[in-house]
Length: 117
Length: 114
Image (cartoon, rainbow over all chains, first blue to last red; front, side):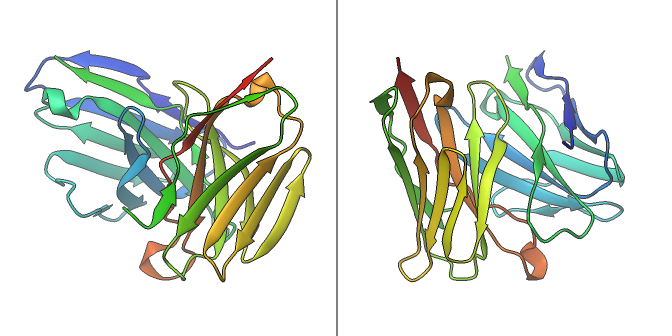
């Protein structure tokens, strides 16, 4: 089946630094990628939707200047957490959808656990 | 996102039991109804999905949607310890600007003990 790879799987950083998380579709072209955030024992929260070559659409309450999303190619989207703070510590997951399929099937990355000290 | 409600559990059952997992939703625009399974410290994986109302069966798993009552169910027959995971329901909008967007329930944590 289709594979979505996220990197890094774990990252620890100091408060005030920026962290970049990559999401790659390995064997298909992802026209749309979604970024989620998951707090412990909570559901996935959609942060933003990105379409290749255009600006990301952010969900209400998500700071676009803090969570920079770039979808420059059909196989790569990046999420940059700028000036990270301890409250940004979370599990970030991307998903990708290829083509124009209307089944809605998405393929998820394994997630990236961010810890901000 | 409060468009989907799901009892978080935890739910603990013996091996071989029939498990029933449920969600309710409020948005009548949902057309597809997905179920994801998430093992600890892993990303969610698609288990199965249904389109509109009705049942769909896949091995030991049966997904059921009742659009009139906005109720989604997942049944697991002959449950196994390997089924222990968090199960998330996720209705899907397939038209308009929110195409492809999944609205996740909180997930129900299931433990099947031998």
